[in-house]
Length: 248
Image 1 (cartoon, rainbow, N blue to C red):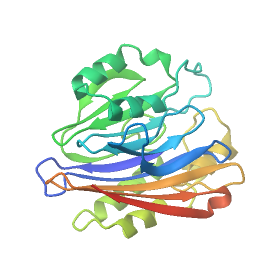
Image 2: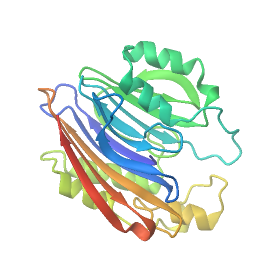
Image 3: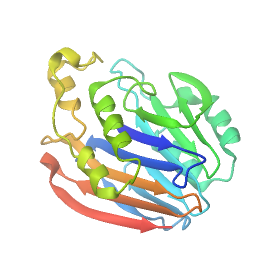
Image 4: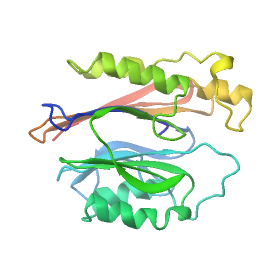
């Protein structure tokens, strides 16, 4: 998952509105959003290479999502980052307990940004600064750097989300997640991957022969605990593969 924008409004009738894109190599085997066979209370996609996931919810009100940190010089983690989401969704530790445990061994993973929440709270943890943060109400975004790092695509997606918060509906949220426009070269970050790759990765929706946006996800959470989770999946060059919707 490489782009997540979300509005956290704990006293609102819709406390969490989230729109996210997962970017990955098309060759990496993946299952789309579904109820997990071995943990029937969990609803998420599945990385078949390492067994984890990038975003999901549970029937008991939990939520978690993940992005990586783009840094070609960082050491490879011994463990898959996707298990950070999976273990929270399948486990029973409180948010504080879980993030405290993860913070103590964050070096086991490649760089990551982790969001975890329940019906009362939403927290953020970054491997770059492994101190959990409880988020206050606001509109946030995270891509492959720190929370709210002002990369052009993140600023664009946050602004688009903010425009739809009076009446958040899936289709308008999916429309801005599908934005293929690259940022001007003068606005690109320098993350060590070269200008051509920075340009490719600068759009909200990424499409190429080998790497790109594999899934776009919208999550709408209501104050009564009901949730609507929708995922659209894509293949090479951004070809549409399917859509799954789950209401809880």
